[in-house]
Image (cartoon, rainbow, N blue to C red; front, side, top):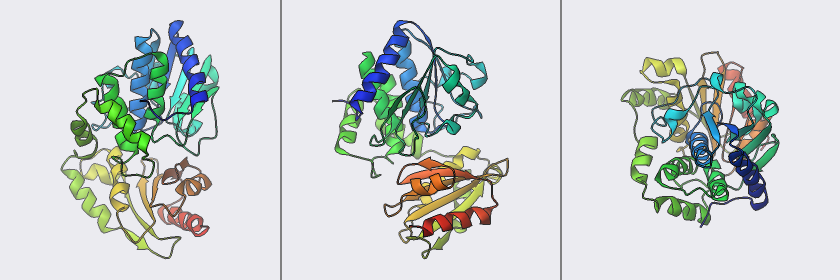
Length: 332
């Protein structure tokens, strides 16, 4: 019982990684900027698997090099190294869960500077970058592809690895509520549960634990939410900022959870949260109930993602950002 994979691509990437481990090569692994549970779980699990096979691994992620408390407990997180400390020309560079080179920040240069670059991802908007690719939009999460690679490497998925993999799977499937959940997704989850992981504790730390200030921020942000039923198939949106989060004693990454609250409005097919950044830009998160391909919208606006979950960065002001979104949603 394995993870859903693209067999030919897995075999190719698996062979590259097995050769790197056999040669005791230096392998740098990175998820995308501001990694979520899938990006970080994939990075930590594959790094540990390669380490067990003999490779010299350096797991990292792009600046800002700060993990939220909801992820810092994952096994192996203490071994992460800042991007400034990785070699400029490693033997192998592995990109995990990054839909485009831009999502790798300052580490994107390693795609060209490494002896071999490997891309493992499940975003439908991935253009197919890197030297060797395993890109499967049908996979529920990148951790599912990593599980297949660990199998190819002959690495036993124990509780440590299963904890990282389950965190990514639970996060990217919305605790198995999203449309990317398939029969083999549950089979994969069952395989991980069979190792003895505490899945309830994992979910509690990922989804149900936040500082008290979160309640105050949530009250303010939901209170300003706007419903526009005439935009596309219906739009609900709101906004916040890293500065506003700080006023409530919260780190900026706490804003990521807002869209999963806003998306509950039944009158709107698309939910949007604008998150103001310190540099004046807006990080935009989109979710769809199924009637709108938000990946198309995000790509048109310079980003990417999945059909039902996508995002992009806007350098317009708030009203300009929402106006551009309305225009794209009006196209159907």
